[in-house]
Image (cartoon, rainbow, N blue to C red):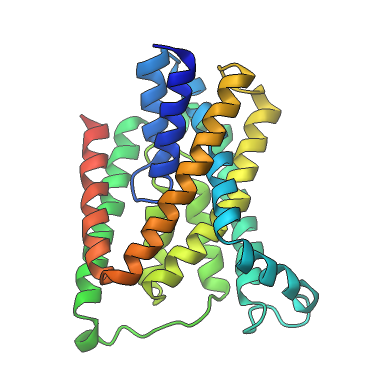
Length: 270
């Protein structure tokens, strides 16, 4: 298949899969192996490299909020996790936690997890989303409680889980959104915090791959094409998902996407 067309297809996959509970690394790695004959290690590094495109998409979509978060930096040392610094505190602490779990996972990438284990974990995350959606459906009678802003526990838990999601087959968005939902954050807020947190993690993964192996297994032209497509498609996809959450009860979104995660995880194990 034409190399540029393959780059377009891989960028399209990354742009769509990054935001839903189906592992983007696993999906892109499997596609690049099938279309280009890459070995699993190179295919996974290429998938991590393409996260740079969806990081650009998230920066573009949340540019206004990122501007406001940056302005709160002056108060961070005096009032961490206060109302005006909660988002920035969450991003700083969660990103540090991601590094603590993600760097060892990257160094052990080739041996730490098999496709079977990753697929079962993805199916587990999908099942967790289904259960969370059903619980939300009956939340009025169960009185789950609500959180209006993130705290230390949220940051450490979600950041640690995001680091593990560097492994193929583990859904970053599914894992982090599930954790936030179960911690009592409402649907759109959980998506927002998860997607904002993806920015430093994705850029770090991209930089780590470049520092480790350089542009992985494709030409610079193909890399630029794939990154550009993933950025454009990622922007459109995250916008569509956020609009969907505003129009459709989030419990239903959880059930549908959780079902996708279960199916995707089970397919990986076949």
